[in-house]
Length: 228
Length: 228
DNA sequence: AGATGTTCGATTGTATACAATTATACATGG
DNA sequence: CCATGTATAATTGTATACAATCGAACATCT
Image (tube, rainbow over all chains, first blue to last red; front, side, top):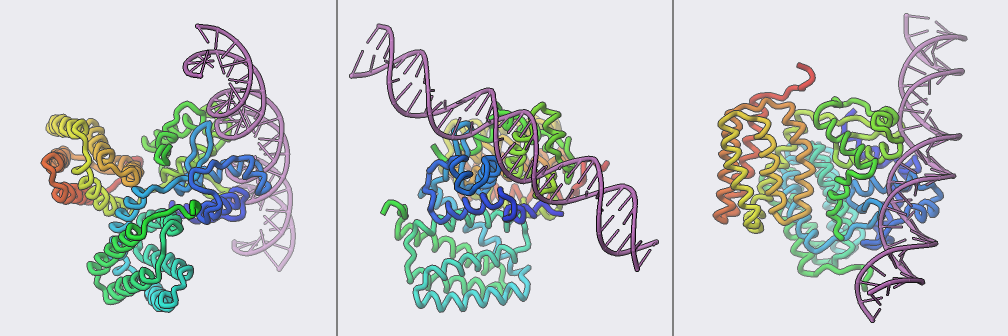
């Protein structure tokens, strides 16, 4: 039994705590609960038909994922993401995603590589059609495959944690068809580098991919999806 | 109020949960609880004179810090650190510590820089005397100053989280006087690079510092302090 | 009016009782 | 003897009652 079963544990949907956790997580990522909104134990417990105990424990897990912040004797608040946070997140990710791509080049399985190729070709279709929703899903999956392929549970968990932020940032970013096409092309290059066994190139491309993604965010600006 | 007050909250020593959390944290880091040992809610509650509720919540926080793993309906287990984990931790740290040193070069305050200088000079004394305990403390502090100085709460928290592992790895590593002297010299060079405003050099040195630290661990080998 | 107490409601913190689950030992059948 | 089933004890999961804390509104004093 490894410590990395943590993620398994978090996906435990069959305990009340697990159900509360998943529901709240989804609601926060979907924006049902706004940034800095206070989450009250009884209110959420009543809404889901459970007592405060599993709610409190779900809160601790959400804090673990960085989605809420618990202030003693006060309450639980949905974390806000500032422009500075976004900058830092992409700075850190650019380094870690690069590292991940490099490692993935040497550890990826044929099955994973095939799924990666499939992903890129499917995404190129949706990119050309401007299907942003599908693009987001495929982008999530593309990076997730690389996380698994890098053969480092440490790095995989770390990048997976950051991905929470990415989903939320995406909601605050104008996603254009142009960026979708460019992003797909970058994915293709990363995939090709991995396929032809060029770790340094994969690293460089993945790092640059993050820089480009951040530049796109800056170019279009961040906005709060609820303030419009 | 920022999300980064999370760390403040964790240091809340005046609630029962806070007390339990700190006690368990210390005991795990000190090795009172061995790796993979099961922590039982009632036993710990009785030992500290509290009920299961604060213990359960403290468990969630310890999981947050990666010190234990909670398996649903089974129990809480002290996480083990494998040789592969150590490798991954230092790989990731080498990148992040470099990034941190680079940022610190541009954001460090005169006070922080002064404490850094003091730290290095005091450590050179203890290094020459072979006072390994004091060296460990000063090393913790040296890196902590840089984390604060980088002016990125994201990066600061991330590196701070990794530091838990560093403390535990240190207990499994033979620390020699020679490595203490070399490490101190590396700290001095990093400090000088920051002082003279050379971000790229600071980054390169900090990255190499981690590589050297890891090489030292590999050279001396890891051992379980309890198996001797 | 402004500053300072004070009361009271709302909310979180903790203890405890009970339910659900798991693991172990033992019994039973092939 | 091994596999399977079952009872039981230990442990975690959840609900609830009560205590402690915080904050806002109101009252009081200067």
